[in-house]
Amino acid sequence: MKRFVLFFVCATLLSSCHQSKSDIVKDYFEAINSYDTEKLNQLLTDNFMYCGNDTINKTGFISNMDYTKNIGQKIIILKMQDLDNVVKTEEKITTFVDSLLEVKPNIIRKRTYIFSDCKIKSIILDTALYYDEYVKAFNEKIVPLNFYVLNQYNIQNDDKAFVENIKKYVTEYVSLPASERKKYSSYAYLQGTYESDDCVFYKKLIFKGKRTVTIIDGLFGLPFATSYEIDENLIKIKTDKSDLLFEMQDGETLIGEGFAKGTFKKTN
Image 1 (cartoon, rainbow, N blue to C red):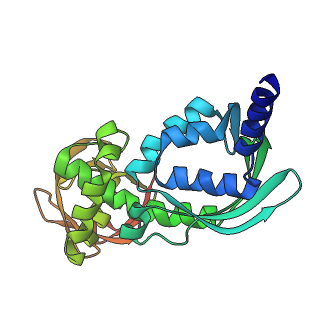
Image 2: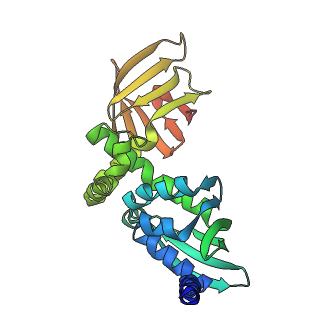
């Protein structure tokens, strides 16, 4: 009887480790893509560590699942190598946010998976291809969305409600006419302070929201608040005499005409 019990225990232990390392990684991706925290917990050792830009333990890694679920993150395996003690992968990351906002290129990650007792002990980020290009493209698309959500719902992009409802906000935003989205883009990039070294009458322009701008005059440094409006790439600022006209050269530069003639550079 004892021999039978011993044999049964050994057989159970062996059967629990019958999977190849590649199969374990595939199960990991299935859990990640289905946001299955229970399955993910079973696949990782108790002392699991993720080593990327930051080092994250098992608890922190699993708790991040809420965020990836909110943004609809999916990971696609492009390549997989099952070596002696590790598995190396090449992976493409996608989210519905990137898809709806048409953010390209996707980040391609190369990672190494290390094992212990048929579980993943650590994941090491070896490199992230197209990261800088992705961040630039993402920021260009997300800044106008942030302004839209702030304007419509008075919710900042660092609020919990923003991430929890991001699918709703992105879907609403991309449903707007192209002309409206372009205006939100102009409003978003206009926000902040612009200073000029060569304009005689005006020193600073401080834009806040869709209507308000504060002008700092160049003679006495006195501020006065007024309104502005956007017409394509032109900005018209109301004064008690006549409108001031500026051309948006890019997201960082305004070119003034007439009494406001000069170059205004964004400082914050």
